[in-house]
Image (tube, rainbow, N blue to C red):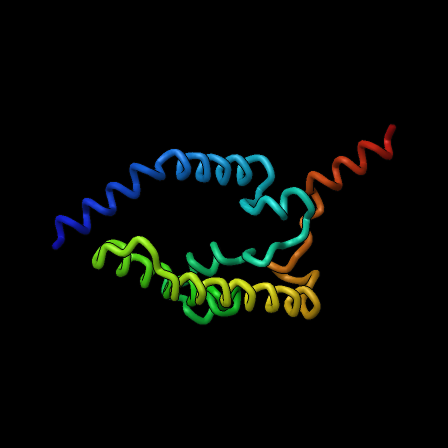
Length: 147
């Protein structure tokens, strides 16, 4: 059984390697040039519904569970989904997981509702609900006004 798990994992990594390379390259580019990894923040200056998930993930890895909850409580739902996906995909070999997919869709809808509440309640405030003034849209507007 462990051999099958690693075979499935290697197959998935090989099939997605270029997508992973491109995503990592984009994150590095955005972080180096714009000091943010979120494309929406870089373009508009406004946080997206997922803003804070990376920081919350690092907080969980640092065993700061309360801090992770404060930054973005949906990190725990994503951890559960990743765990369930890995169990189903790599240990049981399932390709399709309709129940997990429906639960993920419901979670994403809940996350959008939470984002609306958080924008109303906390924006602009402390990260991740803060406005990034040096965004691309602001630069374009300043350039257009200078013409």
